[in-house]
Image 1 (cartoon, rainbow, N blue to C red):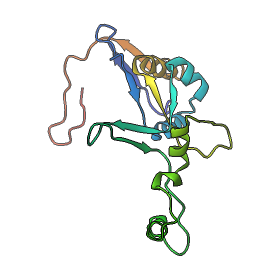
Image 2 (cartoon, helix red, strand yellow; image 1 turned 135 degrees about the vertical axis):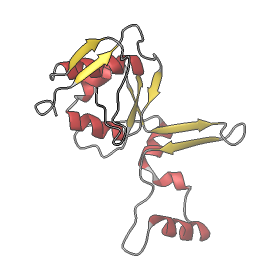
Image 3 (tube, helix red, strand yellow; image 1 turned 30 degrees about the vertical axis):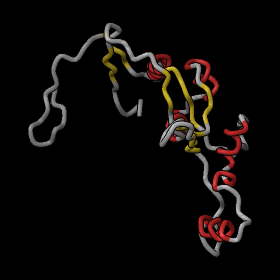
Length: 166
């Protein structure tokens, strides 16, 4: 939108950003593709790591472990959706655990990962939120966003529309 809009970032070094590890979901990759962010540059700048899902430890009771993977479970066919085929196979004693049919879950449990132009794996990142804020600021400024050091004291909104007036 740079050529269409004048964008101003008002930010205060005094306030800063929260310096925590941040877990993302796969849609962040769509956001990055839209902005044409280079994955290698992003990962270096934010000290990001790849993740294939979210692990829930001791979720229901002590010792429980569940991984919500970012992948599709099974493959549906013209005869019906995967879960119907899987339930039938389980009833007949031939189907494996549901997670056995998810590539991302299997890879996560095995501690394996690979990416590249032809990879069909769905993933996200774990990153340093403060570094990501700096990366996005530098990325945006290089594309014409103006940064102003300061704090917003007051915002005036139109009483009917809610649009910002000043």
